[in-house]
Length: 234
Ligand code: BEZ
Image (cartoon, rainbow, N blue to C red; front, top):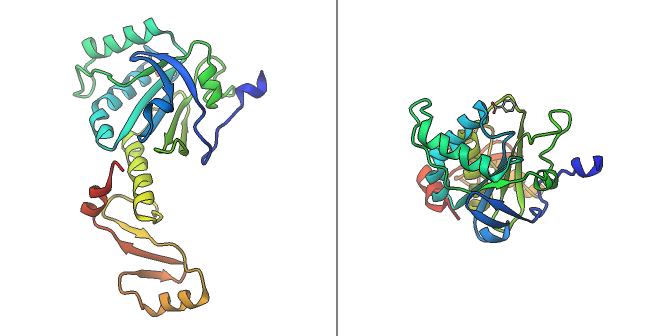
């Protein structure tokens, strides 16, 4: 049992499959969302303040994720009626930081057995044995896990960062580049490292005028914001 709790899918693994009841009907994950990016995220409990602020933020941004060809799927270990009541309360009663009338249209998984939370390593006993931590799994259109974020119960997530990670992963795939610290669309990107002494020499001699090299192993080029944006959602 203890081992089961500690299963942690890793970056590069195939997203574990599950079938679950959600607020939008039964889903088969990730199969129902083939060809899309997916963000599967857990929250500790319905009707709690940090989680409510997070759902209002994600709900407000839902269209932006849709435009990035990304399906959001939430999860907690609460039951269906709790999920429905909480989402209704969010829509009908909560006015927070100018956000109101927020309708959550993405599926929220019912996981009273904790089977899905355990499958994804979302139960982290040092933090809580009875609820999921704030986990975020970024899963690509081929159903491979590409990034995992974990936050504790007491700290709400940064949804701008969640969107930045998704855009970053799509940019990495579309342009075959790596991205430096704090990258945002329009900033310089990192080109693959020199694979031979000859290329290293050429890079230091500035043969390729598109590149800016800080040293032979650290070369960048410019990709405009418009160019990045033209390929997003792929
Ligand atoms: C919250 O969402 O406010 C919360 C949930 C579980 C523990 C602490 C805070």
